[in-house]
Image 1: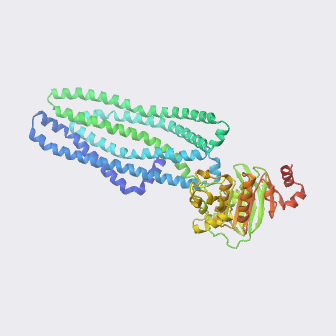
Image 2 (image 1 turned 135 degrees about the vertical axis):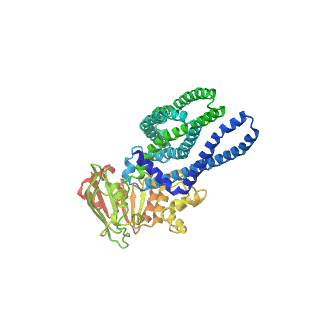
Image 3 (image 1 turned 60 degrees about the vertical axis):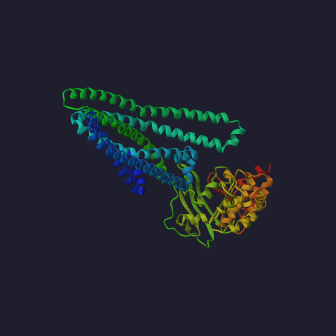
Length: 573
């Protein structure tokens, strides 16, 4: 699992191969120059002790040149790696966002923490990956620097160096235990952070209901509890991450004292010079930095692996509507739309239990039934927001699974009760129906949707911004813009999903005028709770528990005194 995730992350670096090579070369230059600079301490100190002015003057320019090379190498090594990290995570972020839009409604409906959790993946988990990728430079550079400084120590005193290297396995074992612990506690923190993001998003999306029902304290307490869980998990992560610091410093102090005693003895025996001691200690102290950086980078990579696992679990998910293999165009002169023994369910729970329905071109079909009877599922299957568990949906004799997905959806227009408008201008929201069509047609469509009059009263007309999800407009105004958008799309099949159920009587009258224009010459599938709005439908389909129990006109169904009659009686008592 660990290697698989690292391989995926490295795969994201491939498009930036040239920059990575420059990063590597810059790291090598820095490591070589920096370590050579450390080695020069020995001759500099010995010449200084012997008052060899000319020798010191000869070495100083060389030392300055090494310092310049080390500085330039470090600059490009870190700067370019940070830039590559930004590019990589932006690419992953875009892949994730594109995947969100391709995943079917079953995935979105069943995702535990909802859209807030998905936002957490695209922000929080991606940030962890970005911070970790920045450390890739350290993982490459500091082992090089470590090796170069070890080479210095071996040149100065190989026996003492080998004695010190015996401690490396001890540090390695400690690192391994820490990383194992991190793999346990980091996911806990990320999962709680996901819940917190979901809670914050709910607090923003539902602020009106929260204030109305005095739920401010309930939401605040929920976030407080989640914050406590998050801090508890992060406390464990920090405790284990920072444990390496004291251990390393304690070892460094012990080694320094040992080297001091050993070098003093060697100098006193005439087998070494003070420069030997200073040069050895300088390289030894400088080795502490790459060790600490490598430890930090190694532990950070553990967090990156966990975050990438969460991110790539979505990117690699197969819960998206597959593109058509046949890739057929939508039939231009189609005559009928047929549901043939269509079944659909989540797991073992069946929503539709065998729907057989024929809709002729130009007909207005109304779907009626209690909540959960399968009305919305029928229309969602038509646009392939998810696919049927079994059975076929046919446009004439062409299965919709064989039709190019974009072409299929291009021929179906959707108007829902919960209108979604983009945070843009009125014009752009209408044009979203079909960006290939000339914007010059927008005012005409708005007039047909009974929207032009109120649009022209707004501060900037069609250039007026509608706010987040259209919150600067009333419900009726938003609905009329959505109708204008559907008209602008000019699709032959129209789905009206509870389009007027949330409106007051005055707004409903205005919106209904727009809907009447929209339905002209189109095949319409209407979902409605208010039976008064569908009495003129060519065919009313009554659903109960995932089955069609009645089909007929308004009058014929009343005569049968069945399920439709019961609904009608409830609304007229």
